[in-house]
Image 1: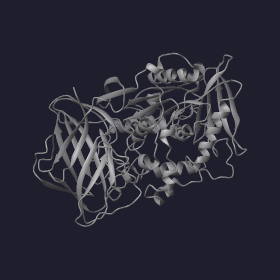
Image 2: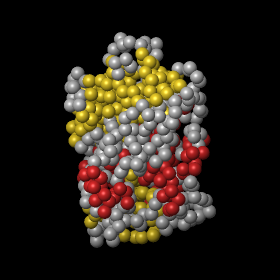
Image 3: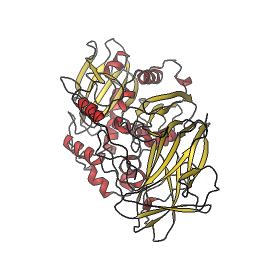
Image 4: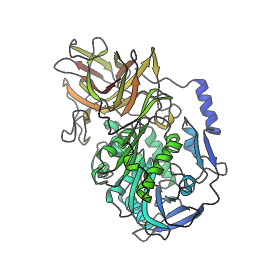
Length: 553
């Protein structure tokens, strides 16, 4: 069975040193000219209020506002010797430069106020200095969304406001933008959700119907310490299928019509990656842009390049500047050949790129290879779900890019079990050695891309699916019968990777997740299998295949 290699002693020592002194995070004092208003009360519709810190430009005038609603505490800042714990435990592959008034995953008020914006950091109801109220604290519930709606409208009519409001932030601060934007508050004029889950069940808690068992218990415990009444872990295990409870958190993507600058991280797989892609593809916005990359989540967000792009975007839609934003290329595409090297950055008119060629590669079980023609021997390959794997190899005969979400179709039969969780991964090898890429939270030893599927939740929603993109409702368990052969359709997390002539792409199938949850900087893990065997068919009648979005160079 394939499991990613463990960190070397040198890597472990480097990370332990980083916990004490994360040298890649540089914190400076905020400019003394910026006016700071602390614990400002923003009224909300139930008669209560939200506590906010407001950062204003030094010059007189009317300004647009950028809002972020926090699930923790806005006043927890990198100052007086404190550093955000995430910056200590998660690898930062590049420098991060922020001011000491930057709340976690929020815009740096020093940068934005200096550039003529009012930055408003808000404590979510029940956290920090915002009152709890009578309703127990929940997670992305409609009450939270309405509170953010009210804050947008409040900011739009203040004496210092030019009437235009934007939403900006990473992860949680991106996720709660979707439903608010779909409600179309009159003063909301643009959003920038920088990496964010858009379907809690599909993207985070049960990707492919497979339960996440690492980050979720940790996160659930942390937010209960902060004051959440909801036990997320208990709710997760109580709602095994994507029922009405899960669906209540899903935004109406098509109702999002405000201009949007979105981001897909090819590193944050089985979390933000597919969720960000879904929002970009389905949002009804006439004007929308996409930034893709594979690297450190916060390293990218606070970078000079990204700050410049976000400023150009908001300057046009919140200040009315004729700065060429409407002519700016729609998609920034980053191609990686090796984990720490960007091979190319180029711009495309759409996502996925219009010049990809969907190419089937057939699983040849007898030769453990991927065949470009369906002329291969009929074969049945079996692996133990608790400890083994199957691997299929392809050697490229020309330079090639794989850009987008691969689709895997498998014909399988289960032995000694009626359900199983199947994990599929794509590895890259160069000169016989595996190439590692950045993963979630800066984890440096990830594979190219991955996916998972609970066999009992395999039913495809044909009305929502395309030939290249299967969609599942995950709402009804359908265990497999003894001797029954079923078809699984899995979609890999989107990625963008260059393969030289002679490089190897390897498809791996197994019954356990690829990366140990005990490894430093990798909190995510998924429910594996303790018994049973899986038989994979490859024949002209039962054609298991890997459909790849190919760009030949």
